[in-house]
Length: 387
Ligand SMILES: *[C@@H]1O[C@H](CO)[C@@H](O)[C@H](O)[C@H]1NC(C)=O
Ligand SMILES: *[C@@H]1O[C@H](CO)[C@@H](O)[C@H](O)[C@H]1NC(C)=O
Ligand SMILES: *[C@@H]1O[C@H](CO)[C@@H](O)[C@H](O)[C@H]1NC(C)=O
Ligand SMILES: *[C@@H]1O[C@H](CO)[C@@H](O)[C@H](O)[C@H]1NC(C)=O
Ligand SMILES: *[C@@H]1O[C@H](CO)[C@@H](O)[C@H](O)[C@H]1NC(C)=O
Ligand SMILES: *[C@@H]1O[C@H](CO)[C@@H](O)[C@H](O)[C@H]1NC(C)=O
Image (cartoon, protein in one colour):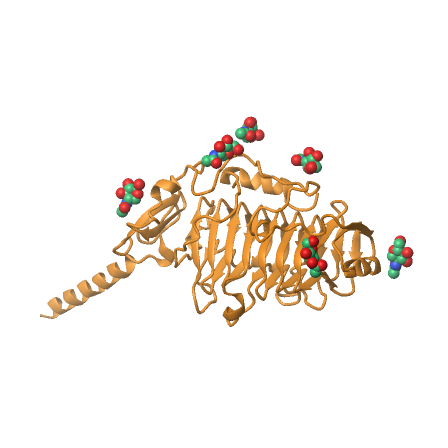
């Protein structure tokens, strides 16, 4: 009698365990270092993404992507994604304009057609940025700042060479349109906003071939963000930048309480950026729409792409090396975000993904060419940052 009781209890435990086991954490159901279950709940199937990562996707929807992922073969066409060589490598001296969301809404041209001003100290820079006209401001050398610089519309701010930029404070702009920030080095940004770039209520922003760094000797909150884009900014691209030695890198959408202002805004593209020796927010995206492709994440302490508060993101052809939590939709948030990920190389950190909601951002409304994942690490190491 006693042994029958124990047997029944044991069977119940096994049944409960099996049930939970079939709902794998973070939807991951396979991969080289995966130790969890290989099954998925009814209606889902385990789809192999690469050697390191398989995920539970709906069995009979457009999300049945097993053919599209083509397993280990990255060289596949999927949506608009025409994978070839680094044919879209841009250089800072070319006038080709942004790829991504900054190319929409009339495009982002900065000060094109306006006067050019070359500056090499704070007072020159302050008087150039105030001019109420289209203008191209060339910064020659590193300018030490005592406070943040405010930009107005139709401005290009460009470094003269690979050792030009600002240090000690950052850039701030609000209620403006059409900004290009290119080829500049930003460091030790402890101005009034404690961000290297702080953008609010602004549209058409292109940040390209820049370098951003602080240090990690002062704790997480001594500096704030490297590039923080908030309060319903829209049509933003960050490309070919190097961001390193910092904690909270790029916050897109500052608060979970800001739905009324941010919903339907905050469209942003990150491509060909190098995130190294950093903590988190690569980016953190709330409410908005993000396309994150061809970036390298190396030595990331806490988390990489964090999509929350119903934001949608397409995350593809990125490379992760020693990077914790490559993609999450449920991190520090009362409401999850949505992600489609494909062709990413998670290295040995795939188990820590937490994509709890499969998204709907499958294609983006602009042309782009994603580089083959296998070549991304070398391309980014050689070409990201000022030139
Ligand atoms: C998913 O797609 C593959 C390739 O097209 C097909 O072989 C498979 O049967 C599909 N699975 C389901 C559950 O629809
Ligand atoms: C992809 O790019 C190559 C090279 O630029 C081009 O020849 C080809 O037609 C493109 N394919 C598609 C499907 O766009
Ligand atoms: C791609 O790159 C390789 C190596 O640099 C080169 O040999 C090849 O011609 C390139 N292919 C195209 C289509 O540009
Ligand atoms: C960069 O752009 C300039 C100006 O358009 C061009 O002359 C140069 O060949 C380009 N360099 C590379 C590496 O593409
Ligand atoms: C800034 O540079 C200009 C041009 O070289 C010079 O005339 C001016 O005195 C400098 N201002 C300061 C505050 O150094
Ligand atoms: C920026 O440039 C556009 C196009 O020339 C112009 O319509 C607009 O008024 C400018 N904005 C400001 C604030 O000067």
